[in-house]
Amino acid sequence: MTDFALRVIAWQKQHGRHDLPWQNTINPYVIWVSEIMLQQTQVTAVIGYFLRFMVRFPDIASLANATQEEVLQYWSGLGYYSRARNLHQAAQKITRDFSGIFPHQFSDILSLSGIGRSTAAAISTFAFNIPQPILDGNVKRVFARHFLIEGWTGTPKIEAQLWQIAELHMPTIDASPYTQGLMDLGATICTRTKPKCQVCPLLSSCGAYIHKRESKLPTPKPRKPIPLKQTTMLILRCGNEILLEKRPSNGIWGGLWSFPEIEAHEIATEIAYSKFGLNVEPEEPLENIEHAFTHFKLAITPQPLIVLYQPKRLVSNTIWLPIEDAIDAAIPAPVRGILNKLNMSQS
Image (tube, rainbow, N blue to C red; front, side, top):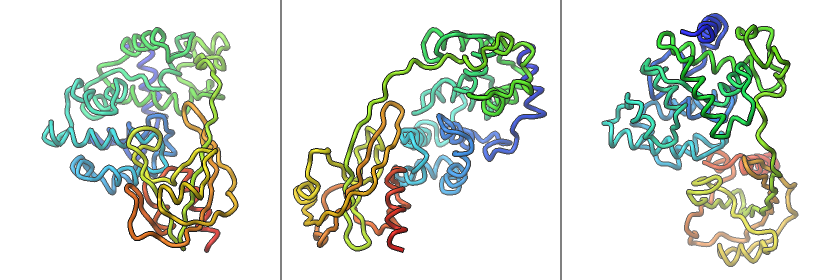
């Protein structure tokens, strides 16, 4: 075992995190759900969602037998919704191909939707005590700083170099505390900004600290201008009810319920009639909202429209819901924010 691994293990056992809801278990389902939720999302944001999700879907069978819409409802607000769809699909694959038992073989774990090498490694290590090296965002940062790796960690060349380091230092004994220790160091000590170097167990050998490169490493991703897209959301309201439209399964907010959208040049009242058969009276647009995605920003203009009467027949993939029920549906975060404001204004 390398000295690097020994120090990480010793630190984790004494100072690492031990009381998170998904710790102190070898249940692969629990570990799997937590690892998927933690992809690109901080622990503090995940805990509440994880606890609610596990109450509703306590095992693989309950998740596999649920509808995708219900799974998305319990994921609503957590973002990156493809994770929820992949989780649901993987649960159905486990039920179909592995008799409902989470697979032990690393190649089988990798075959599940939404699971890459690092996530599969975490499940293998924590659930089955079969050590596999991990390389998530936090671990990349620890390695890049400690081993003085220059270059953006997202490039194939640098990532391959980091995987070599991960494989070199992966112990066969105490693999779980080592893996958890790397995660904990990245999340609590070797943070993106203002790292707490003085309390880091790797201080004496950290290349970034020795060469005063802590603020320069990891090398930032080359910046590109983030495009700004615009959309108008139609807030079609009849009394206390709101019209929601189901989004396509692919693309942003795939499979969620949302307000119908139109292009900036389109006329809201005309679309309401031509698409939904609704006679409406427009109100003043609400304050614009800007929502950030990974690769672009979306400027949303919420346009309230008072519906004079509801048609007897619904257009496909639409639903009328009371505002308070719509708030709890599987909807994107910006839509929930608009509904909450509407709900408060009428109470």
